[in-house]
Amino acid sequence: MIFKDYYKILGFDDNKANIDQIKIAYREQAKKYHPDVNGANRNTEERFKDINEAYRILSDTTARRKYDRAWNVNIGRRKNREKLGNRGEKSDSIKDGLFGMFFGYAPKKNKKQEEEVGAKKGEDVETEIEITLEEAFYGKTKKISLRTVSGTLKTITVKVPAGIRNKERIRLIGQGKKGAKDEKPGDLFIKVKVLENDKFTLNGYDLHTKALVTPWEAALGGKIKVQGIDEIEEIEIKNGTTSGKQIIIEDKGFKDGKGRRGNLICEIQIMIPEKISEEEAKTYRELQRISKFNPRELSKI
Image (tube, one colour):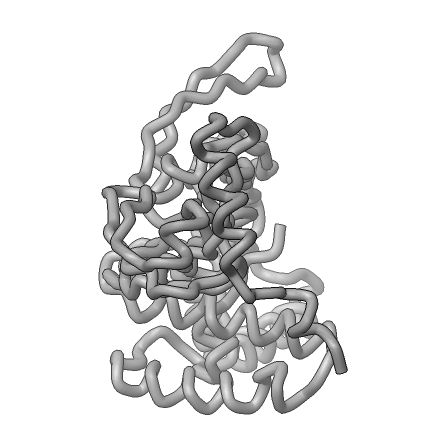
């Protein structure tokens, strides 16, 4: 399982950068790998996604603190060992060589060195959970059951953070397979699948929905109510509104993980009743007689 080094993605060698440095690095990298600059290139598109993902995590204090713990386990400790090794390996190798030259054997490794060599992490485990769009928006605590090597079921409580996106993963350290004796267990990676929603479509951090209006509301204008993901919103329909027109309500979309939200985009859809009364039919016939509007005339060249 590959651990993403968000600091390296933004151009840093370690995790000491402050928020201002992270913002500057993000703007530089985002500008360099933006799809509008590089065109249809899968590699740069994936890099651009990683850059945005890195900034989203590292610019959020809570998310960064959690990530730094995982970064220290996967990256930081290795870097520290490399630094110590670069300073000590040469002198140690000279000493070892002298022992071998004059006495015919190499000195034994100390207990700490043996532990470092023998310490192997257990196998990581990956699974998937399905959640609704509303659960992804609000966050949710879910329980999952995994079958262990011995065949027994292990129940794990998973806290799904609010604002999680489709295909993002949750990492539970130490919840993977157990290794041999004295080995640390692996990690559990939970891939989140956000189910399709019959009311909303998620595009980036924007939520798209349909605003259903009557023919007379579209012709005369007025205010209607639209169901948002967390509350009912009121939008104004201008007279002469046609199907397909979009009305944008700012900051009422999906959470972006940084305390902000995308937009709620309402697409107008004019609805015609399947059945009408005789009085309604009479009104429509009268409108047909007096109206000079012909939408087919608009399509003529």
